[in-house]
Image (cartoon, rainbow, N blue to C red):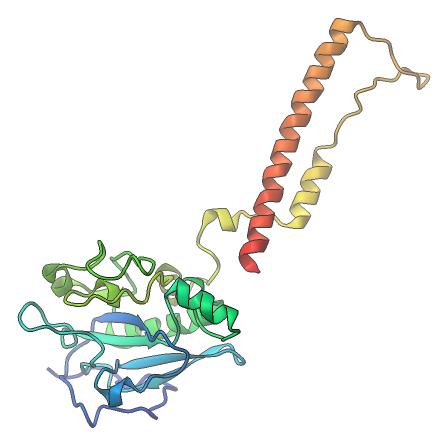
Length: 287
């Protein structure tokens, strides 16, 4: 099958090129399979024997991804298991991308404690999402890979093995768009874990990397909380007459007035407490 469109991703390094050693099969790729390397450097891939088409490595200083290309876009790579019988994996019109980083929360915690800079797929920075989206857009514009994902990206380690998100042979054969190693049949790996695929695709379509959650979008700022406080002043419970002296109120009327003020005050406190809790949660999430 002839290869259509540009085969080299603009700016990608061919320092680790394995296309000459492992020629692979020509095809028309219409699926992107995403992986994580579970390391912090570009792997050796056993001399190319288990290499994907591309590796995206973080440059934390420049806040960008550095791309390495190992095979042409429309040539089969070697990062998937392909068992005898069943279905084809590496050669079934898929282009594969390894993200240098981890999807494992235990590894993430260990590296954090060691002060080891790394990408953790459930918490990718905006610049990583931006650069992954740029690749997805290029694959769409030049090779027609749909900017869609009809699968659920499941958090590791529950994504490992024969999980609920692993495709059947039939689903795999008919699939188009973006998926992960965790979705491919005949494989048991759970990477790339909880990859923010929706944010990547939305950015590729011209959106932003802002949080998708409505709750996050509506999170109040400190200024908004302050404005809420001033918009709901607590009324003075003591009524004054024209001379500035306290008015005497019948006991029953006073009690009703007190109850009314108390209910209004309690409601305002509840509202403000909710706003403060949401702000603290947002700050904790960002830190």
